[in-house]
Every structure is written in structure tokens, then in C-alpha cells.
Length: 416
Image 1 (cartoon, one colour):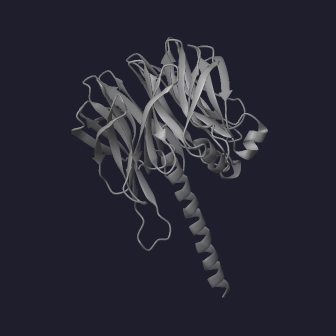
Image 2: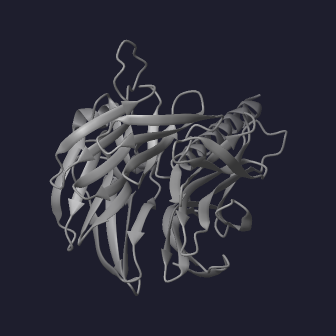
């Protein structure tokens, strides 16, 4: 009887461990943009405890040109195993010229970055105070760095309990930033908060702010400026993808929604001519999504969509256009490798790169799965090729950032 109890106890323990691993992986894929997920909270829950720590180093955003590039993300390489936002800069030989951790407060992460002459401006979120840390509450964060990686200014922002910035674009007189400010717990009676669009001046002062949608779940994941209009994309409640158009003073001009996406919704945006292209996931059922690109006109009217079908939780996270006006999409494919008899699903995560012309006709789609799991978060055109960044998980449980160079034909040229 004792042996039977021991076996049952062992099985229960193993089941709990599998559940933890599954929960960690599922949330990681929801954190990809930028972006977009609650990476800081997950890092605290799974990486921030010294006695059961896993090493994590990830990249969420990338900027640069043919002579240099810079990345932002986070790692937990410190004595307390806190997740710390980081910014790194490299020369044309991919030699690191500096790397800076944001060592203010407790856990922190950068999701997006933009260039401003010789400066870099990063956005994300952090736990500023011990009370924030104890309650797992984040404040949105914007930090400006000079050419040597020294902080010019750092400012935080919040409307409701939990706030974060997900993406940033430079304009002539400042910075446009998207994100989210929501209640940690369900509250009613206050219409402020939800998805946020904020304009800062060059010194980090708020010029204006706009909110949209549910103050429990809405988020803007990315933005674009086209012909003196601001386009934001994200999700409202109930798996609705959203696209909103604002004038340069922050007045809402038009919007549209898409039924149905996943919990992230629309996550990337790019334009070619008078067309807007948005990345995300088309919700097939509770267990499956297809990677997707949706085409709109400049008045947010739906034109068509392109679906990349697979057999799992698949999505395109980010979009760029290349030098030939092709749409390049990166994302992640999550394939359930569990047998039907198992009570806990287990997934394999592979990166995916898709190339489409401006009519959304498929040119090529390739997957990447060299490690246990691979996650793609951002992409740039560098010297006519494509530089993809993200991170991979390994058998020892660690997560390490990586750079993958693809040719114009989507052939892997190198991995660093």
C-alpha cells in the first residue's frame, strides 16, 4: 500500500511539473512582440526565484541599418535573478559596442525601440517600488539613451493598476508610443484605461494620451504613421482584433475590428502604397489558430486576408516590407506533440518566416526549429538580407537570445 501511495504521489508531482512547463510555454508564446504578453510577470513567477531559477536572455525588438543595429529585451543574469530590461548596440561586424541593463526597481523588460539621430529610445514596463514588486504590478516605461548607452531620461507612466508600453515610433516633434493600462482585478464604473496611445516630446514629457476599449483586456501592440495619420493595432475584449486610425493630434478618425483572433489579436503593421497590412492569428477553434495577414485600405476598410494553415497554435507576430515591396512576416508555430492519452498538452514551438508580394500571393514560407523551442520576435532588412531576432529554449531549461540571417530566398545564412 505504501508503494502504491508513493507511486501515486510521484505521478501527481510529475503531473504538476508538466502543468508548470506547459503554462510557462503557453505564456511565452503569448509574450512574443513584443511584445505583447506579460513576460515580466512570468519571469518573476518562473525565473525570479533563486532556488528554482532558469537562465533567460531574450530579444523583443530590433532597429538599425547596414552599418549598425541595436536590440532590446531582458535577461535575469543577476544575483537576485530579477528580470532586467536590457539594450545592446552592435557595429556592422556584429561586434557588441555596449550593453546596458536597466537597474532601477525590480523586474523590468523592454518591448520596443526606435532611433532618434544618435540616440535610442526604448519602451517597456517595470516594477518601480517594493509594493509594485510584491503585488506584481507594472508601470509603463520609456528610456532614452545617448550614443554611448548613457541614460538621457527615464520616465514611467500609468493610468490604472498594470501598465506597459509595447511599441514606439519617432515623429518630428517627439515619440508615439502604444501599450496598455488595465486593472489587475476586475473593476467597473471607470471607462478610462485599456489600449493606450501616448505622445511624448523629445524630453519625455507627455503631450497627450488616448485610450480605447476594455479596461480589463484591450491593448495596442504596434503602430504606424502613414500620410500624417497614426494607425494602431491590437485587441479589445473577446478575441477581437482591432485597427484604429488617429490624426496627428490623437483624434480617432476611424476603426474596424476582426472576429476572431487569439488573445494577442493584431500584433504587427506595415504599409505599401495605399494598403495597410496587419499580422496576427485567425481563430479556428479553441485549440487551433492559423497565422494570418489581413489587408485594409487607409480608411480601415477590410480588403482581404491571407491564411497560412498548419496544425496548431500558429500566428504571424511582426511584419516588415523589403526593398522590393514584399511583405515579410515572422511568427511562431506551436504543434501539440502530446498523445491523446495524456492529460496535459505538450507543445513544440518553431519559428516561421513568410514572404508575400503586395497582393498577398505567397512567395515562400519556411520554418525554423533547430532547438527545443524557437521564438521569433522581430526582423530587419540588412544589406539586402533579412535579420531575424528572438530566443530559443534548450534542454537544460535555459532561454538564450539569437540572431538568424536569411537570404532573399529565405535560406539560412548564419546563426549567432
